[in-house]
Figure 1 (cartoon, rainbow, N blue to C red):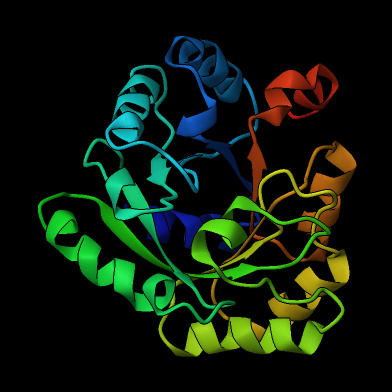
Figure 2: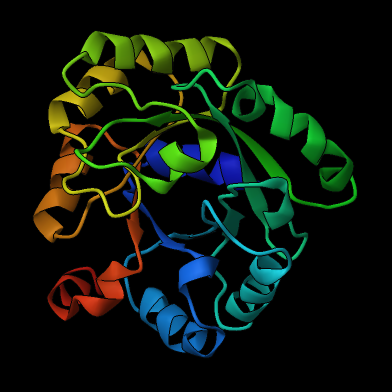
Amino acid sequence: MTIYSHIKTSIAEGERLLAVLIDPDKTELNTIEGIVTKINQSIATHIFVGGSEVGEGVTETIVKAIKQHTELPVILFPGDVTQITDKADGILFLSLISGRNPDYLIGKHVEAVSKLTKTQLEVLPTGYILIENGKQTAVERVSNTKPLVRSNIQQIVDTAKAGELLGMKLIYLEAGSGATHPIEPEIISAVKQELNIPLIVGGGIRTKEQLEAAYKAGADLVVIGTAFENNQHFFEQIKL
């Protein structure tokens, strides 16, 4: 079964999906075994790997190390084409539809094709929507785009729906790495009501309560950072 088919089947069966995001730029190689061991002991269903600013070759090294310690699907969450590696299982083919920088709408994707066609990666077209959270994120800085304003829920909904109508298979609502607070339930709920494709939500989720709120509002797959590893209380709450 493909990664996407499994996601859709799991959602249909009422399963809550959880991905832990590992940023190669912020993760030491010698810590991978410990991190992945904790992920395996948790309710996580997927591992995402990527970041906004990662050196060439670093992602592949981290992915290879992760694969040695888990059977969970490892999916690339790339900030640039240099992060593509065939050592992973799939890739979120992210189009930053909240911004208007052509490089991140289509330019980087064209550049990536020559690499992707040489891999067996499952490509998951994903409409990526950055929502402001009170501070500038790495995505905003690197992509030179502005996030959507939280108070304009209709614009967020319309952007997400436009992504679906363009043929995206997933929509990803992102508050950004280190967000001061997660995306509000009312935003998640409003977007979910209009979509017929899976909804991913990430950024700023640091507690079980925030995780539950995202699911209750309609998130199909929630993404948390490796901050969970440093918060033993949170980790204990999401253990199997």
